[in-house]
Image 1 (cartoon, rainbow, N blue to C red):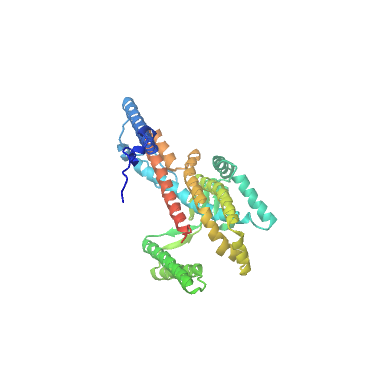
Image 2 (image 1 turned 90 degrees about the vertical axis):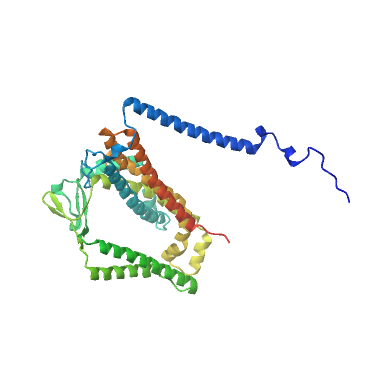
Length: 396
């Protein structure tokens, strides 16, 4: 048996094309070139900014954050002697106050309207369709301006404020609603409530495992909610915390008790909720229609009611489909909070502009504002991605 040696110059390395024609080399070279171009652009912009700041005599550090702000912030205890850093923190808190509450309310309203759009009742279906078609085709800035200048500004003055049901006060100064009066020493009660929430979640998870093992109805919502109510009631009886519900009452030109929703906050919140919920409603409608009809027919064959079919079969599957697109709407709502600057709502951008107007360096201030909104968006995006991964179907 003999072996034949391969002719010289016919090895694998001899068939490799020259570097300027090798796809792998070209791909790496293009990527390196793109990275160098981006880094060079960033360096050029930073050097140009530093040169201009030096020429204009504007400071380039962030030491101004410890200087007095020189302005007050409506709806807070912030004083003019407080620092710029504290002002930006208050602005970030106001941004989150609108974004987080708006996300929850817009999601609930969007789900309801989305289900209504598929109702067999003509009036309900057409009302939901009108809600969606009108609100999603109006720019959010127009909605904010309309509610602030066209609705809230036309409300009666504080002397003639409306008191619907005797539980609220409505005027052009804002809306007062019933709220909790928190006295000193309520911290322990809050910790107990947090522990009760954790215990309720554990009980609901336990009922789910029981259902998976035995097939018995889990009723995890009833078990979890009942556990929460029982533990909170027991904690309240034991600790006797200084927590009470206060109802706003109008006394001449003063309002005692309750919580005040300033016109700027209320107009911004309601506008973003209505605008975002119209898009979420369409996402929910499309996701429900994307559920295979066989699933609905199987639920009907089992004798499930309309609500049970929706809650147990349709919505859980539609939620998996709707999560990515709904997460995008959450991000849009959080970024649209910056539109509150047009009605002087003290969110992060408004505080940054006030600081710049008072002589603080604009590049550093607006860079902090940019970073604040970027951080909020990245955190929301991470949470949505986490929920999306948890809802994915793992093929085995």
